[in-house]
Amino acid sequence: MTHVVLESCIRCKYTDCVDVCPVDCFREGPNFLIIDPDECIDCAVCIPECPVNAIVPEEDVPSDQLAFIKLNADLSKKWPSITKRKPAPPDADEWKDVKNKLDQLQR
Image (cartoon, rainbow, N blue to C red; front, side):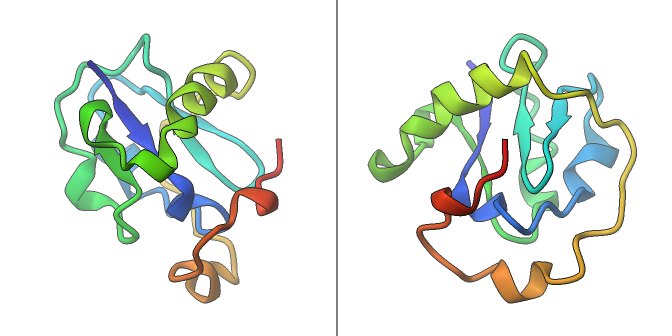
């Protein structure tokens, strides 16, 4: 089993989770982070670090977010690893409570 980054990360991309990951399983896109399912060891230390509650165990992905399981897996093959915390985008706080942001995802 792995963990999955959900829609609430889009345009927020807080990287608090990256600092605590013991296996460097996060990958970074232009405005979203994902978890590489082949690297994740299911330790869950990233979950409480996410200020927008965007990380959940795969078995707890809400039914309206199931596409993010495949999205994390697919993008993990294309996006580079991120291993150090970075500043959030300047408008991240404006986007943190916005719903239905999939159309905002930059690949």
